[in-house]
Figure 1: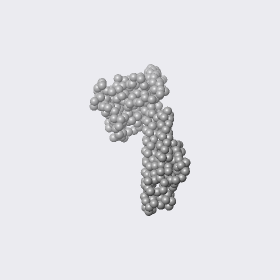
Figure 2: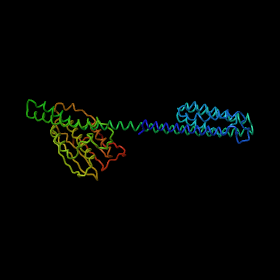
Figure 3: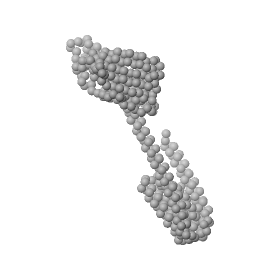
Length: 415
């Protein structure tokens, strides 16, 4: 992870490297001052301090090139042009190329393009004036060839700077996108877990409250049973909500695997808890059968996912069907061959219980589909040919994190 001390150490290291580079360049130019070029042109015969001053102006600014890229480029270009005109040296503008690379790397496209135009213009003017006008020693073609070499060096370093800048920008965009995707994924995970924790219990509570209100005068004993069921279901929902909130108030630094329960270190529900779901559905007026033919070696994450899918499917039956609906839950498979889940109701219930019409659809099937897709499985949900509604899901033996999401082959109605 990139931290402030790490960035500080990196910045200090780069400044030290730039200072060392500046020292080497200054020393090289001081050594070249007064030596002339090896092209037969007159050697520099001015005062030594002029050569030293030019050497300092060519090399010393490199120490701060990352802080003030464009001013450093202007100073280095001017000093290098002076070295060319005074015949102190005829180097291919290496120092200028280094500062031009920095400008191309750190500055936006418009400023970088301006820096390139400035470097090409100054270098061409200095080389052509020095070799073809002030101290001509050959045809113009030689001066043009030298100019082309300088331009090649400057252009190559400028292009390298722009390429590195673009790569860094792409990497930064990718990091931001990954961070945003992780945030969205975490929000969806929290929403999905809270939905699973609360939706089922509240659906049972609402249905039982409607039943109690409907039969309060005619059948008081049934009313008391409904109230007791409401109390028990509410306590269970409150316990699960406290577990969930305890995790949400933690540091949130842990990574979660597909199917992991939001309830942290508390035991996650699994296949052994399915009879409790059936009991709740029965209390809500849905006659429910459970047939389980699943091997005992099912991984905990897969078992939790199976539990959540059955829970949501039964919640939908409680919401959208009336008293007397018959529902069958069938589980087959195991850790090696995967698990098949089928929840089918006959839709034959009496939907006239007051309050049932207020149980509108939410995000149940969407949450089930997301859970199944995390395992690379498939989900089908829709009207059953014989009447009622059917939910069918298949989970592979192992999670397939990289498996592309696949849409169910049948039309899904969001519950």
